[in-house]
Every structure is written in structure tokens, then in C-alpha cells.
Amino acid sequence: MKKGLKIYVAGHRGMVGSAVWRALEKAGYTNLIGKTSTELDLRDPKAVQAFIAKEKPRAIIDAAAKVGGILANSQDQYGFLLQNLQIQNNLIQTAHEHEVAKFIFLGSSCIYPKLAPQPLKEDYLLTGPLEPTNEGYALAKIAGIKLCQAIREQYKKDFVSLMPTNLYGPNDNFDLQSSHVLPAMIRKFHEAKLNKHAPVSLWGSGTPMREFLDVDDMAKAVLFALENKLPEHLYNVGTGTDVTIKQLAETIQKIVGHQGVIEWDSSKPDGTPRKLLDVAKLNELGWKAEVGLENGVLKTYKWFRKDNLGV
Image (tube, rainbow, N blue to C red):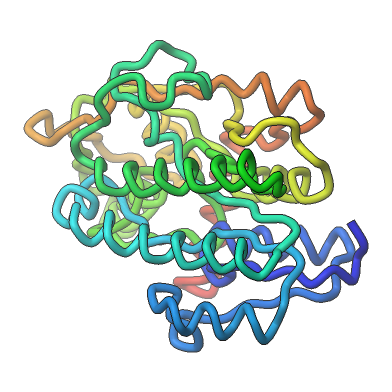
């Protein structure tokens, strides 16, 4: 890829998009385009058509999505399904119609069946029922994968989908009503520490197992996909290792310095029992995660303190 290649990063202000932007700049790419949601509503097909027709990017990285944790997903299935379909359909269709050379679609490991064998292989897609609490989001992402696959096979275009595991890092969402588990824990433990090490109440039993990937590792995977013509349409992106939610909580508690009690609210849902990705396909091509969980959480906590407290 030439470093002057015009690349549009959709969702460049979000956690993933901003990490991709940093990785592209670090790699020497100089012709990057980004628009905020107020500047360009990706749900509006006419606006997306006009923007792509004017800018004529040669590559598009779709990191734009309506995202949230279990609570947000379960309470707004309609919004998560509809808005994500609108965003990705507009981008994928417009990229196809305007002959964009490379399209990278980013999704989530929630696309796989709730009770699929572990670790999750790409071949397990559409082999069983989804986790009900985030079915809307998952269905939208599955539709995006299938659109990109169809364009790739029918029109021989370089459209590829990357499915990351649970992501975290700088620019994450720390709002307790809409955030994912790791940033929510960072905020809870931090606020409890400031409140004389008060007890911290966490959802579920603590027994489900989850895999967590530093967002800068994810950005490097996107860069790898941009600079290489990958032989298949769908790739998992993760560390290949997981921890229990209890182990995650104890790791974050230690890094934050909270010395109080952790209380588990078993009346709240656990979600999928385990979600570990099989990352052999992308690893064999040459990409591997580099950031360990403790180092990644420490980096994220430092960013949270600086962003929220200025320290």
C-alpha cells in the first residue's frame, strides 16, 4: 500500500477508530479522512453517497457502530439492530458502487452461537442460536459479514471482515449504563477506592470466561489486513487466551489499588458462558497479539485517570 493512499476511517473518534488512526499515522499513512457523526450521519444513505463520491477514498475501514454492554444491548435490541444495519449497509453499498479498492469491516465475537464449541472458529458462524442479550447487534454484524463475503465472491473485490474479541483501551466508554465489562470495572473500582474502599458490586457469578484484546493490538491487525491481500473473507482477532470475570475483577482491583470487598450479584445475567476465539488463521498469516492483560489494563487505567481527572 502506498503511504499516500486515501483512507476513510469510519468512526475515527471511537475507541477502535482512533486506535486505527494512530496505527495508520505511525505506519506513515498521510492521507486519512475522518468525519464526526455530526458532520456525517452514516445512517443517511444520501449523505454517505455524496461523501464517498466527493472524497473518492481508495480504502475504507468501518469502525463505526452503535455499541454497548449487556444492559444497553438487552434494553434496545431494535436500536442496535436497525442503526448498525443502516451504518454498515450504507458504507458497504457505497464502497461497492464507487469502486473502493479495499474495505475492512469490523465486527465482534458475539456473532458466534452462544453455546458453540470453544475456541470459536470462523466456521462456527450461523451454526446455532445467538446469545439473547445482544442478538440485535450480532445479527447486524452477521449481515455485514455476509454482504462483504458476497461482494468478494461475486465481484472479486477485496472486502474482508475482522471479528475482534472484547476490546479495551484508551478512548473506551466508561459510562456505567452503556459500557462493556472491563471499563465499567475500572470506573467502579476507582470510585470505590475514592469512597474509602467501599464494596464493589459486580453483575453475575464471576464464573464466565472472557478474552480481552488491547485496542492497539486490534489496530495492528487492521493495518495488517490493509497491507496484505488476505486469502479468506473472515478472520478472528484475539489473544487466544481467556480469564474468568472474577480473575479480571481481581486484576483490575489490584491495578487500581482498591482494598475493599467484591460482591457478586447473581440475580444479574452472566451472558455467554465462554467466548474464546480461535485465532490460528490470522496468526498463521503473520499477525499476533502483543499486549498482556495486566499491561493493557494499566495503560487503560492511566488514560482513564488522565482523561477524567487530569492525573
